[in-house]
Image (cartoon, rainbow, N blue to C red; front, side, top):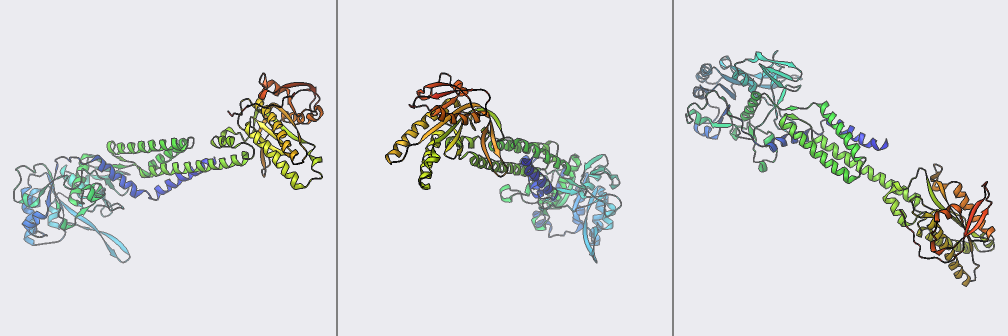
Length: 613
């Protein structure tokens, strides 16, 4: 279970980060990217914008214009089904101009005016205040809606507040909602919150969040909706019937007015994307169109997003944890691409906004964590394997173990192996009257040569036994023909001892004689010891028999004795051209029945080589 602690901590940390809003800016950026990836779309022809642009200001004069100008415009727009002003008329102006405008509003009969919320401080308290159109205008209008639009934390407008419930006892509509109500011949009394996240406007049911905000659909950047210059419309420079049954929005588009906002189409690099900030009146047009379509975007709930996070986290943990880093990387790339495609299609087809930034971050963090954890675990295992076997096996076997640590069963396993014991005859008496330095130097020379030969034939040095040693052929790696390789190694040891004796005799030193016992059998292979010290070794009666056979070399005056099981394993094979002599049965201490033993009578060594499987 320890391997899953780190991934679980990563999943929990990402979930907490989501709850704290750490990924919100990234999520907003991805949401905007879906719009830009989809591209601009035609918004239809229901809505026309009459823009107070720079050309109009040059022709009509500097702002604010007399309200009688707006009265003349309303007479031109008499065929429009609804006219909405994204302009605030909350203070009195010239009485004659106000009267002319009020009369024009009444004559038209389908004019929606703008209001605005502001906040003022009274002592330590802040109060919300509504700036409404002057009474003569309000009385003749068919609806009033507030023009305040909430910006997200990155300063981009993606929502409208559909209704306000703080000022009045009933839901008070925003400008676009008031325009849609007037368009359908309804009044604000048809607005009601039908339940958590549900706003009912007549027969329309619209999703809103806890703050009564509704995500908008954006058809493009600036000038996506058909836009006509105020001055051209006022002068009659438009085709007859242009505004018949249309929704007309009137507002500022001149950069001098500073009524521009960032939207998903203008939230990226303005130079590269070519999308300058969008005038507020065009955002209101997008809101009207979104409400008319009746399918605004929705954002998946927090619990749903967290559930998706946890499920993906468990999936990544299960897949990456059981495979190598490259397979895991391929899976992570496929999963991330699949999640992105699913999120994009869900956004496009179902208009449901799923969190993607947190998902991508979780997948990357989990892969990084588990890959690093796997690397550290593998390195720890390599060090453990090197520490366990570095003294006992050849460098070639060591490299194979490091590449495939699972080949070495450290916990314990029964396996057929061949065990070889070597001991120097009379070394104790030899060393009694010799300088310790000479004794140790000679013993090290001997053991060094023996160890090289054991490694050469694929054996494992189990341990040094004073002036003797024990070797195993067939563990920790399986070794094909382990009995033959052990016998070939013994013959080579005998030859090497004779060569060493020749060198020592030339120096005036006494020669050494060795006894070698070899036995094959099924033994217990694994780690043996205490928590403080543990060694890899083999245990079993066949190990004891190999040791006893080495001892029998003294009685039979033979330097190499092998057991019956080794002889059977060899069959017709004779490593190095060895001649095997049947020595009959021998009584062996610790064994009830006599043991059949064999001696090796040939000193010659051929080119028999080791090999691992």
